[in-house]
Length: 82
Image (cartoon, rainbow, N blue to C red; front, side, top):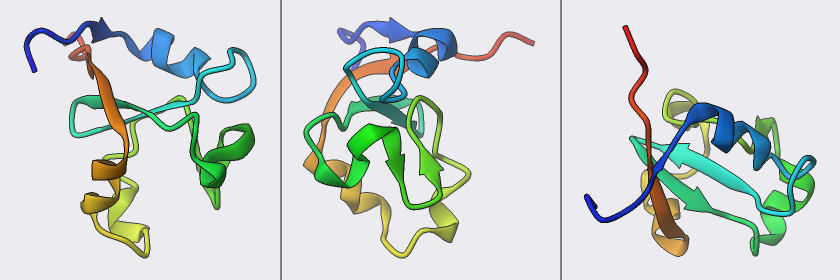
C-alpha cells in the first residue's frame, strides 16, 4: 500500500458526490472509489455520506467490512496531526 498516494481529509471531503464527480470514502486508513456504485449515488448511502472516514460508522451498518472488497483502493488517508 506504500505506492498509493496519500489523500488528505480535505481532498477526501471534496469527493462527496456533490463538489466533484468522484465519490470516495475511507475505511481503516484506505481510501476507496465508490463512484460506480449505485448505492452511493449522489454521495449518500442510507445515513452515511461520502467524502469522509467511515471507520467508526461500520459497526452500525448491516454488513461487514468485506463490502469494501468490491471497490478499488485509490489511496491512503493522511494521518491526523497531533
